[in-house]
Length: 448
Image 1 (cartoon, rainbow, N blue to C red):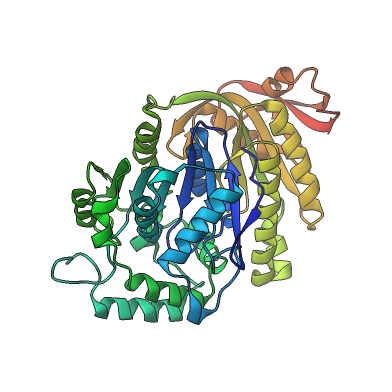
Image 2 (image 1 turned 180 degrees about the horizontal axis):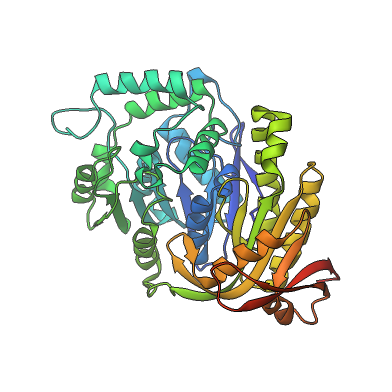
């Protein structure tokens, strides 16, 4: 899907950033936890796939709560109450032309979602919460929440580390060791709230308590929690579900508190079935796809010449440029190992055009990339792809020179009539791949 346009709704004097994507038969509002940035979210491939799946069966409405992300900042001493946040949700729904919607609240966003569903049942098709608490401070009758002492430590951590690092082991343990994800996660929070705003939001959340509201929720309700979530315990989901009349409780495998990582398939299946009555069958494990590999030419020498800090900045600009082209040509980012990309496409012509455009845009940064293309059957393995087609694409890319886009003869044959032009680069043996392979350079593209 193309990236949705960011628009603004107005709630009182505050402008709220929102997006609408998808053409499903029902409206679904996603209320994020804590702090968010609706444009930065699309930069992470895991978050992107999570949102795209929601938009595949709904008209998905995303927004940044006031004081966060792209919405208007607010005075630290005047952060919104839950009531004001409900008004903001109504304002976003009105601006998006939504009379009634299902509301999906994650973590802190679930607290306001519960209150909204109880207050405005006429505007709420259904309520869904994931990793949501009823209160955020310990009490004898709610022993799963953090103690006051633990919260004080959390406040200190916010002031000391905000924007520098995120405890991946705690919030997204399935992503531990993924440095690219860790860098993005820290940037996501930096662009979602300032340190002072983050601290004030956390203090506000500590005071939230919707226990008495739970029995007043009278809309169809789905409560979900991962069983080993360390941030919001599964017992909290059980508590909430037991107090909302008719609520369905689903305990999911995994330990990730972040909704969009880990085993997202079962979670998304539950949401789709709850809202539409349809549960998809198993996703196909093998599909025909065009794989694209790109790599920066001479990266080590370039890094030595400009220095580590400048090189890091340049690589981030390179990544942003490549991702813009992937989005433009409907490519799916699979991996960003080192300074290269692996992406897949559902059409070889789009893949070839994307590679040509990517080579041009990074040249404006003073960089050259090499690229390789091949079309074949790939095996889907969660967020990854594997199989002989992937190896062939990688080997072809390794043959390319600076600024060159090479392809297999399979790609050349499949795009006949597209206006793409090729030049023969000979027959090659590809390491680890049986037989010999004709390789062609993609040298130009007519209208497409």
